[in-house]
Amino acid sequence: MKTDLSTFRDEVSPGFIRKFRYLLWLLVANLIFLSNIPYPNVLKVFILRIFGAKVGLHVVIKPWVKIKFPWNLSLGDYVWLGEEVWIDNISKVTIQSHVCISQGAFLLTGNHNFSKAHFPLISNQITVEDGVWVCAKAIVTGGVTLGTHSVLSLGCIATKDLESYYIYGNFPLEKIKPRTITTHE
Image (cartoon, rainbow, N blue to C red; front, side, top):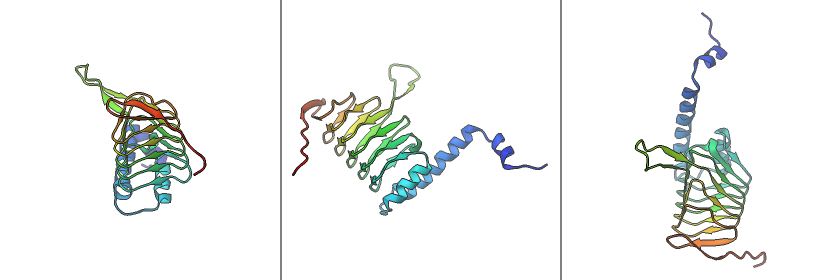
């Protein structure tokens, strides 16, 4: 009996291929992304693109950045992902251009519906628009859009959309003041 690649492909289930792709991603991510070794950004960007991420120009990815599913990630130009950023993206995460996601920030698309007996998974996308700064240790939950040039302050939690050009802080989260951006120093 003669077998060829097309026969093999027809016999392999899509579920197996998805699991294999995820396993391969875990191996690569643990070697390259979850490491203190200062691999060049060009290598990290290349790997993300191989695994299906859309990645713009001049992206900086610091050590210990954890990305669950690169195929659900879109990064614009001039994006900075600081040390220990965790993008838990079972749904799509879109980070537009000129964005800084600081050290230890957590973008979490999934949650569970605790009001149901079987505790079903809830997952919603996150959008981070142009010019946003997510400060260190801040958390963004699924279904949230961070409006253009907004700031989510140190250690704060965004469970609702942030309005463009405002700085948010405190607990519970509140609008602190408008963000003024100057073009001259």
